[in-house]
Length: 266
Image (cartoon, one colour):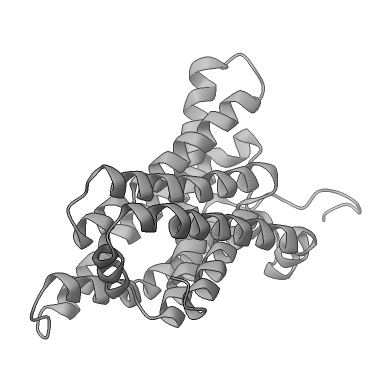
């Protein structure tokens, strides 16, 4: 029997993995809302192939998600990185632990989203021709569908892939390479991991941009810079607060994008 005041028992790897993997699958289930418009942009007749192509496009994310969740469940606690969903005895307790800093995380994410949209409106709309933005808009789902995909896939699945999996792995590798004699990786290692993960997060958006139009220097700069800004914010929140804070911030950024779209500014 657990003694009064004692720390709750650590959840098993399988329990932590299952909780996070099932959460990530919610985002993958929402992906068809984003995939179908992109397929339509690049193919004249999808009546027969769309279902097959959509299903096939979900397989790779599901496999990558499993690898990322397993990495995080193996390494995160060694760096004192945490997921409330994975570690809390109950989902209700995970929510109670998140609630005190949920507004701040949401506001930071929305702020990052607003900065991204302003940079797009004030800088890149002057550098890129209008037809590019029209084609990019045609490749996106509707505003509400885009919000659903952004919150579920972006907010949950991408954070599991890029922060829980990739950023954790980078931080652990840098720690073991440069500070293996230290008990913890230290600020420099964590900031480097945040930066590298944000760069890879940004680069991961290039293939989708390439389907809209062949990449050039301006398009690559736009994709990398705008996504890097958000990635740094999400990574910092994961380090300082929790994975769920990064998820909330990511969702907040997509809420800002949604408001911009329905207001007619994008």
